[in-house]
Image 1 (cartoon, one colour):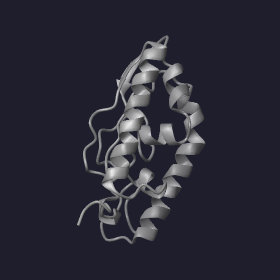
Image 2 (cartoon, rainbow, N blue to C red; image 1 turned 180 degrees about the vertical axis):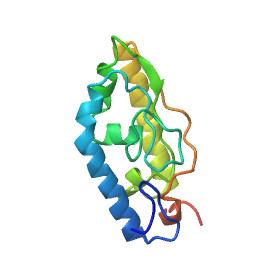
Image 3 (cartoon, rainbow, N blue to C red; image 1 turned 90 degrees about the horizontal axis):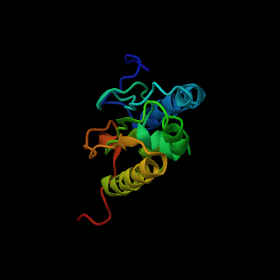
Image 4 (tube, one colour; image 1 turned 60 degrees about the vertical axis):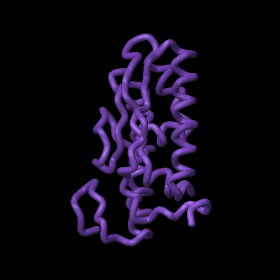
Amino acid sequence: MGKHEGEISRDESSEQFIAFISEETEKARLEVVEWIADPSVTDIGCVDKLTQKGHRNPPGGVAFLYGEGLLEDFVANRQATQNAGTLMAHLNCGYLFIRGLQTVETQQDAITEIRENVHALNEKYGTQFTVPEPEPIGSAAPFMKSSPLQP
């Protein structure tokens, strides 16, 4: 790809970007079962190196866990031991982008839903995970579409 492992070039095409994020997502899918079961993994960052680094950094951070249907397993497996941590998400997210959420507004709505889900899981399992307010710093920024609501 002509770039360092895990880095995203600003001059790549959207097809190259999608291929990169898809490849990183597949890698994360192969590893996730192992680290979901490890209660010492409490902080989740993102592969793009633009957000806070976690113990594990799948594409999309907490959006990956939610989108893959693994968020509840992650939280439930930490209720008795390490029951708090930071779960990162950001706007201009490549993982959300390849899942069809290609405007800031649709990504914000998704992250709001994820944050609400984390809050409900915290109440259910007695945990204290947080999803900070997302910043617009993701690597999909050059490929994002304008909102249909904007002129």
